[in-house]
Amino acid sequence: GENVEQHPSTLSVQEGDSAVIKCTYSDSASNYFPWYKQELGKRPQLIIDIRSNVGEKKDQRIAVTLNKTAKHFSLHITETQPEDSAVYFCAATSGNTPLVFGKGTRLSVIA
Amino acid sequence: GAGVSQTPSNKVTEKGKYVELRCDPISGHTALYWYRQSLGQGPEFLIYFQGTGAADDSGLPNDRFFAVRPEGSVSTLKIQRTERGDSAVYLCASSLTGGRFEQYFGPGTRLTVT
Image 1 (tube, chains in turn orange, red):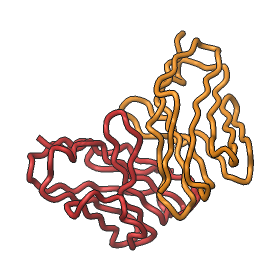
Image 2 (tube, rainbow over the protein chains, first blue to last red; image 1 turned 90 degrees about the vertical axis):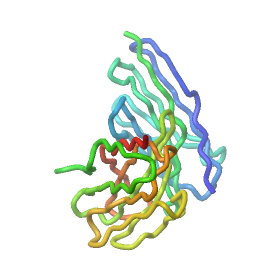
Image 3 (cartoon, one colour; image 1 turned 30 degrees about the vertical axis):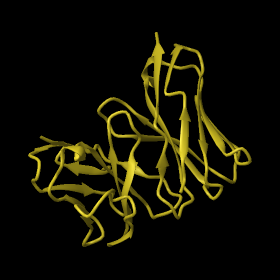
Image 4 (cartoon, rainbow over the protein chains, first blue to last red; image 1 turned 180 degrees about the vertical axis):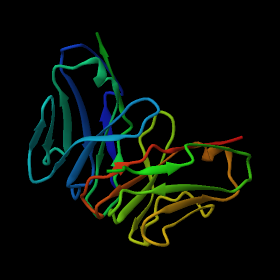
């Protein structure tokens, strides 16, 4: 089955700097890759997703890139703000299989 | 519109007891998912419903866990003979339909087995 690895497990950045979180997946059939943000004690919130027919997607300060050949995808947050501090999860699915999540990255943005 | 809701928000039960956790998906969403999240981990898939039927229950850890969705809307996750290792946050998510569609999560039920 699918296996998703996520790095780093923790990340600290200064406010205004960029943050990058990377994930790799094992199943070449996977074609949908969402990213979730989870604040302490709250539900995971979908912040951006990408499908395998595109290589990059951007939404304001957030972007996701996908390299199907290498089977990895990344989340990029620019101009980070303290409210970006949270745990971020990547996930992957082929659509016919359950969504498989990474273990999460705890991002701390230091003011 | 209203998002996914779950009740109760917290449940404390004694080892060996039976519990039911409820999920109300977003109106019109035919797909419903149950996940379990332990501290410091990502959500772990349990079961997926498409309409009233369980399309994939491969994530249920053992036969103490069971879920139903009799009318294709509200779902109930049932855990028999609870064990301390069942303690976790149980999350429900729904999507418009199955497959590669956005899943929206509920706030979860924190289950503590003492």
